[in-house]
Image (cartoon, rainbow, N blue to C red; front, top):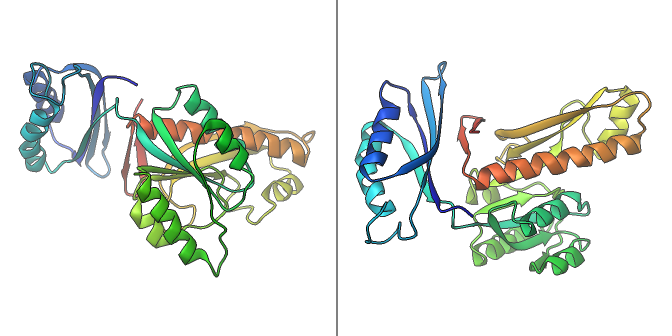
Length: 290
């Protein structure tokens, strides 16, 4: 965990935005470590991420950069420039819940990366509609909640899930191969804070056996996609994608194995970038800062 703060900005593009932000940070004694920006010329949008060092007393009255005072000073500027903005500190780990079903490759990968301190978060609970992940959760010392879900129990199941998430103070939900559709009401509780992963055969190969269908069609590329969840199934803003080339020699089992490797990588990258506050959503797209 780093003793830094991050400011994310989205606003109408105009001259002088970088200067206004950097000048105010300088006036408050900030030591800027990294700054990046992007312009969408078609929409006239400006996006910026700034990260700067914080002393240990950043939130208090002692000398040094004071985050509270900076936020107060920045608010009128942000209002004048029509900015959507968020400032946060990196030494406060994000509280995360993992949802999974029977396939454990993604949840196991995230748990390992978390234990290895690759992910700046606290995994507070694992929720599953199957019990396959229970022993894995126990191994990592994470509470496990089993909630069976079907069409007739979906509403009650989601109500219980939301109660669990609120009890643990969850800020980010990661669907680590959770094979259930979330309702619009559930998604509304966590806007731009639910990350999903799936194979990239959609919409060409749908259903329960996409790898079999792709193999039968003789595809030469397979891939995985990670995105934010919206009320429209598999249609949220894409965060990351990756592909692997295959050949006529690869059988269905080879496609499945490579696909699972891609899912691990793509999901872990998306989660890490979210935790590092590197993503801004606009429309149905994302800006992912370096």
